[in-house]
Structures are given as C-alpha cells and as structure tokens.
Length: 161
Image (cartoon, rainbow, N blue to C red; front, side):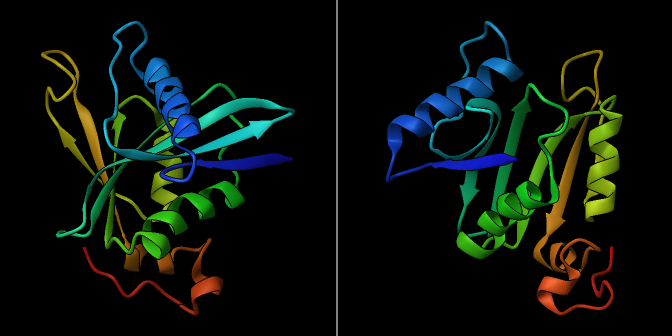
C-alpha cells in the first residue's frame, strides 16, 4: 500500500525536499529547481518512491504544470492518479493541466492517452536532437475519462478536440 504526503505552505520543508528529489531525478547533477510549487510524494514501506511537482501555476488562465519522477514503476495507481488530478482540478480549480514527456516514454504515453490527455509533439524542444510531447488534460476530459466518470456523474466524454 502506498501513502501519499503533501508539501506546501503548511509544510515547506517537506515541499523543498520533495521538489529537490524530483528535480534531481529528472535532471541529475544539474541542480535545477521548480521555483514556487506544491508537491505530492508517494511513500512505500517507509521510502519515498515518487514525487509529483505542481508548478508554473497561472491562476488567471487556470493552467498548472506537473512534473514527476519515480523509482518504482508501480507507483501510479488509480488512487494516486485521482489524488494528483483532484489537487489540480478540485483544489486549485484549474481548467487544464500540462505535462511534458519524452517522446520515447511509451508507458507514460499509454497512461496519458487512457486518462484523456491530448498530446502535441514539439520538434527539438529537448534540444537539437530530441523532440518533446506537450500533453494537456482539461477538467472536462478528466471528469469524463473512464476512471473518473463514476465520481463525476458523466456517462460519456462531452469534450471535443
């Protein structure tokens, strides 16, 4: 069983530690940071195995970006997915989440497609020789995906591309 912990204004030290952990896993040795953010950690058997960082929040547009890293492929359970997106859509009230991924991350691409994300390939966004996917999920698509539909009373997706 996984435990979910949060880092934010109420516990800034946890937030800073989790954000640094995530940044170090995404960009090893580069000492990058996310700046102003909130974090969600996933703990298994007393060890931090995954962190999601919610950053680049634009309240005037209703958009937030998520970045994540993990050391365990099984961390992304339905419960964890619901907690991640419930924070975005229910707690912060955004209308869209943005997530950037490598084009070769087929496991994540499969998960995002089944969850309702739309993906856009941007040439060279990761450098001269590497493209990147910009993935977006609207609140309407989230509420109507097959995992959330029952919670939100939707029978089919009403959103259009």
